[in-house]
Length: 247
Image (cartoon, rainbow, N blue to C red; front, side):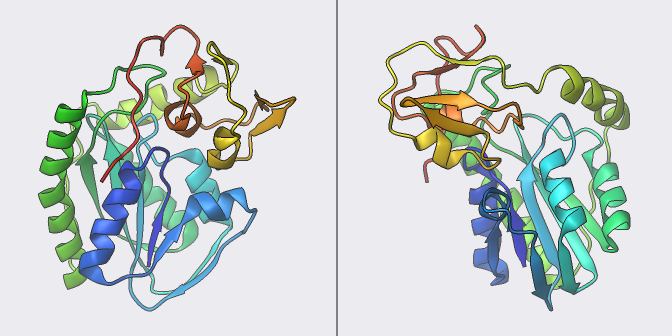
């Protein structure tokens, strides 16, 4: 069973590609979290988590969901993390998560996809993004075939990786992952798309405008998925291209 969480579509794409090869059932954790479903899953085959890398670790919202879910059947679990550049020591923390939820850690694979974190970085132009996606496919397929064979995914943790995934991660979520920077700079069409996209139900439409409620994970779904591109994050996203995965 493949469990995936995705802000702008990169991890969804990876999960779908893996499912094509393994024949596994796909479960969107965004929907489970948004609908308040705790999660009661049974799989005779290994569980596979596919998600973005948040500050070089599995997103806290995903960790919390898995810690409160019931994953019955197979004791094995694989991790596929998408990222803009690298995953640092996320593998080590994925193994610790497995220990907490009673699963055997079967390995980890990093998949580089187009950058989408426009609160801090520019995203590639469409041609560059398409090239990055093209180069990701053999990596995803190799991981999927390894999973289908029941073998371990082996990946080395880079130097200083564990430090980045511990100290830097804690600083990042303590001081930077806030929703106070989101605001409107163009005329909002009141379509409510941002409210629908938010997996944490953190956005509510008030008098036809989005209002953020203080419980944000910086998935970038609202800002990158806004059809009118009227949402900005502080001054960082101004004039930056939005990114939404297009097959």
